Length: 421
Ligand code: HDL
Ligand code: ZN
Image 1 (cartoon, rainbow, N blue to C red):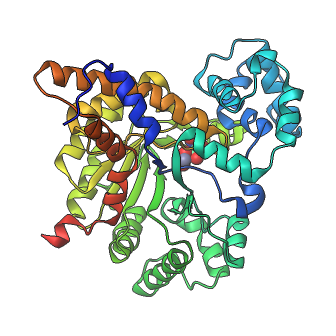
Image 2 (spheres, rainbow, N blue to C red):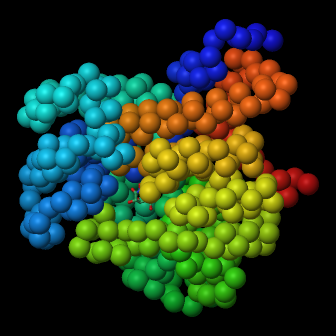
């Protein structure tokens, strides 16, 4: 076994990270064939809802007046407030700086028009290639909603597939707002109604099957409010236990739950108006126990849920924790969450997803996470070596590939462990 005593462990991890190709398992990016749905460029970077929320803390402009502006006018406001009038030290602001520098631009000139000019001469094709290369990604998983009329129009026309843009079937309206989804489903030709009779359940199965056939998704996904509880018999309970989870079992698909988002706490902020709440990890445990043939990918939005999610994952091999989601995707919590997972789960989880909405963001979201991962993993390897173990370069590479895509791929592809036992 090759051992590099003279090379610092941080360097060895950094070198290994530069060699592997990462799978980004949850994003809001779209394939270039989906036209304007794929967001990219400096103005999109600046009007990202994370920056909008931060800019409104300084701006007095009425919400409605700001959102009535063009994207480039909104971007100018945000550039002025968050980059020129105040130092861009927040994670989202620093991300823009990291991204521009790694693309070879120099934000220190503070010249937004020069940056815009560079992008104007950029082809999307070369930009996709370069952003994936700079982030070290082999592919991203999109968030594909059969309830989004703009998106479904592309899929109904038939899409040219790009192997770097994989799919996931997002079904929040079905589980969280079924009553208001019935009309849409009936318009699309599915004979559904409020009561989940066998006939309605069959029609909902047909709807999910039709979209799974179109998209070939890696998993089904939903985000859940903090108050979501599986202990209580509710209509959501029935939709989950009688439709969604049986469908996932039939198709051999994991069910991804993103727990703890409180939508529109400030509706005037639009997409930036969501917040966080403490979720019931007991509900996650109940689902894992009651549906042993289902597999659950889970991430939690609240910092306070992270430890109990790791403990729950120790109890259920059909539970796969992933990522540092949204408000936890900041260096302080990346470090804390990765360290919790290393200490409680070893390497049996998926360490990160970017949640990128703008193509260019995968550059900073992955660069910043790799900075954190080098710190946290080198601390664990050093502690292990101090206890009397040796880590080879091959084993470092193996461990990184596991937590940055391979564990997820194996979790998605394996037969349910209960079914095979
Ligand atoms: O529900 C989700 O998938 C979240 O990631 C939201 O899209 C959120 O707006 C977001 O982009 N977080 O990073
Ligand atoms: Zn997301």
